[in-house]
Amino acid sequence: MSEDWDRARYEREKRNFIESRLRHRSVYFHVSLIFTVTWLAGWLWSWALLKLGMNSMPGRYAISFFLSYVVFIASVRVWADFVRTDRANGGDWGGSFDFPVGDSEGCAVVIAALVLGLIAAGLFAMAGGLPLLLEAAFEIAFAGVMVRRLSRKQALGNWLGSLVRNTWLHALATLTVLVGLAAFLQAKAPETTTFAQAVKALYSK
Image (cartoon, rainbow, N blue to C red; front, side, top):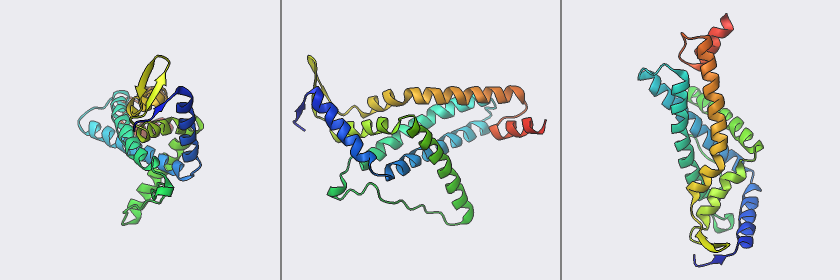
């Protein structure tokens, strides 16, 4: 793009982009999918680390969380390609998804993961997180546009910097609560190595 925006137009274009996408209810479902994938990635990393002999819940959850945050970033990047497409141009990013689940057990796993994803997405939305994700999509949609900021110019397109800048506090708060809870549970039930085991051990006392 060869356009050149001033600060006022930049803010106006960004606001219009975010508001137009938030009007589609499917954006909430999409974000729940992002958190579902992120949660599953974190669970799989934790399971793999446990199999490798890492019994410390706080340390294992901290590493798993960091790795799942990388998956979260990758998921947002894929999602942003759908969000930046205008429906009028044939890009129905609000369409449905098919899950290739062949049996009731697999369906139950998918439903449970989606429920957790919806809860996480709801909490994230309540904290004002959806516009923060859409800012990354905005950077992608208008990559290359020059924005005049006081005495300098800056090209749009730094979606990764925008995403990390907008979500690191949410991630840090979640990590602190997760690791703190894991440390508390394992201190109370040192013979356990998983969250479920610790809760069960404490409940039985």
